[in-house]
Length: 401
Image 1 (cartoon, rainbow, N blue to C red):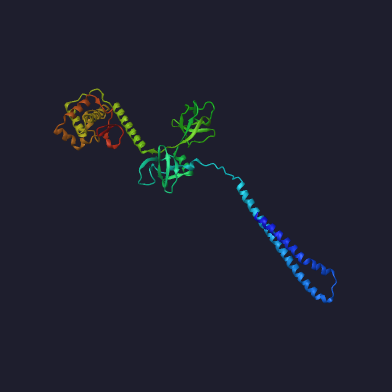
Image 2 (image 1 turned 45 degrees about the vertical axis):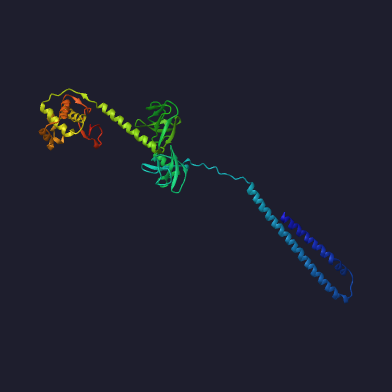
């Protein structure tokens, strides 16, 4: 509207000026041009003509200036209209959104550690430990930070240090490396074949029930339409259409969950130990004819090896000697005890020292019971210090195997 008014004002001013000048000077000029004048009036007429010319020139200049003003106003109006058009175009044009697929790993994190990474209640090394996220586990990113990142995994929510983690493509690559991929049967009767073929005559390694899982063998040759799996320490193949293949990763474990897991593991260990003890419960074998000296010698060895232990530990040492005798290590009890490199007290002089001082009653009793056929070590023929880590039946300070 502003430029429109400028244009209209310029046009009106130009026409008004032209009409005014014409009215003021046009009649005199026309009259003088039409009538004949004497020569004495030529000078006066020439003067008037010059004035008219000057006025006409001025009029022409004013009209030109008015036209130029009008043209400028028009150009400005066009510029404004163009700007308005661009502005309207920008406002009205719909924004085209690019629909890019976002990787699910953009919001996930994995610990890049040898064992586990601590999860803390706050973004500080001094804050409370709320859990651990072990190698091969995954977490969702709750809030990113420059040094610490807040995560959620399993029942644990807390902060982990960025320098020990990877995200995005690196996390995905690490997950494929550390995670375990399983093939789960979507129906019953899925056959696991020795070769990637449905032809008759192919060996069937196993038949999967619905929901059954087998570990995918990533190192086996890959065949289109088939999934290589581990089956009874062999590589087999299942038809891809009958299984779902998924990568499984671990989750963080809270402090409470870790304590419960440790307690459960200890309980399981104790249970297995009890089962081992039951297996090694005292059995009765045939008695062996032995002299008083044999009983005393065996009692002295028992005292040297387990004199400070309970009766079961003492009987266990006697049972080992008798198991060796029955196995033919030597032709007599004394032969077994003095066999070279077997029982250190026999070669060090300790055995003779005990014999000279006298053998304790419990050790003599254990010796006699062992000779009579009692065996509480399950036929074991050897023993070591329990701290050695040797597998076997632990009784007192020794492990028997």
